[in-house]
Length: 137
Image 1 (tube, one colour):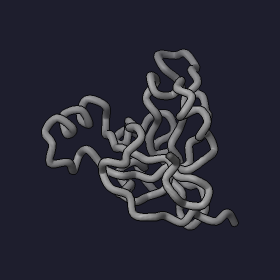
Image 2: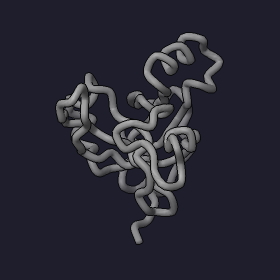
Image 3: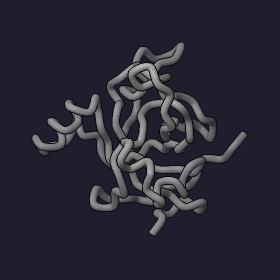
């Protein structure tokens, strides 16, 4: 069984990028336990970035899925990295590595973030983690 990385305390200002689709059940974001897997994500949860393919308007496209890690085991696909971020080198180099959820935008005091989350079917900010559990600088 894989070990979950140690997590040090990270503040909202430490987010590296955003993820989208937490409130959607399409493209594998549902399972036998959850109708919508992303609704079970909380700040502090660890996700693994995984390269995958998704169906967009009948066409298969490359994507980066965010898979919830529970007790060291990959469980549910809960979200995706937005297309514009998925091609960035700093994100690509973290495929098969860990990120931690910093903030869920549906719960944000910011009306801008809540609106952005609604438009993108649920959003969160995440930070990249190093293999020793620290933040990747």
